[in-house]
Length: 104
Ligand SMILES: [Zn+2]
Image (cartoon, rainbow, N blue to C red; front, side, top):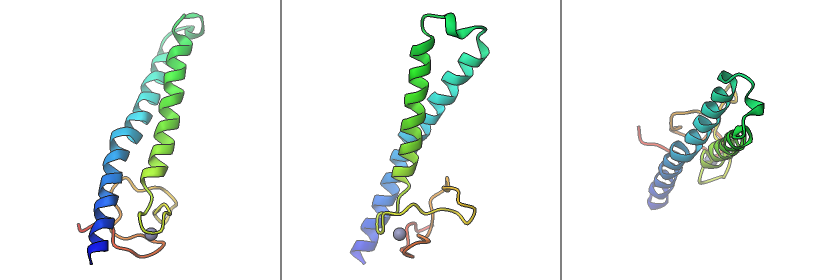
């Protein structure tokens, strides 16, 4: 019973990290790519590669973060929806090992 609660807390903690870093990473990526797309001839600007690098780092951190922090703490697999997507909302149950992940 105690282990169950620990798993839920760990999962909750992971999702907080995912929200903080994973989604902000993707947001940074979108903002930097969008700003490069909106500026005419961005490649001649001296800050082009800086913005591009920030965007790529944001993308990598976002992608890895979302994968990493979505894992089920019990079986270490990523719980996915039936269509293969990683759910944005917390999963109530891990589809791999059946452990309960969320009380709601
Ligand atoms: Zn699991």
